[in-house]
Length: 142
Image (cartoon, helix red, strand yellow):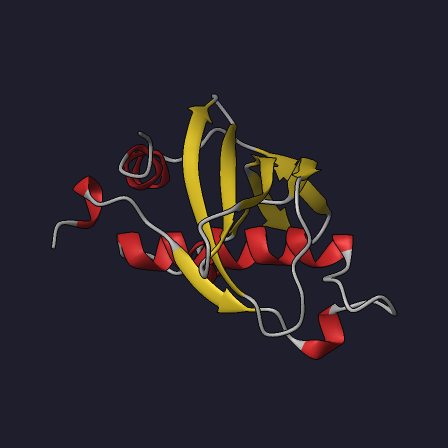
């Protein structure tokens, strides 16, 4: 299997602690689902997010948006399909489809925009996407 030519999806289950009093997955959980899928995508492509941090780089989220379409409940299985949709000079944008595995229903869609920064003692310093990171992310673009 060539990861650069394979659409990626991350499979997970809604945990009890992610649900609200109505038994529905809380809206904030979807942002965590997107983050988990994004980091698993990087690992699937061959580089763990922690590798970038050890190299002194970070990718903090600077924008997030979620469109909720249907409810998820405790133990529902979810498929999250992240894609790189834009590579800027010092940023990357991901889009996500979140689909209930049992019936294929689109339950949410989302977008995150991440900035590339140098992790330094004085704070976060924006930097251009390094060539190796850009090449890795290009493999996840449609």
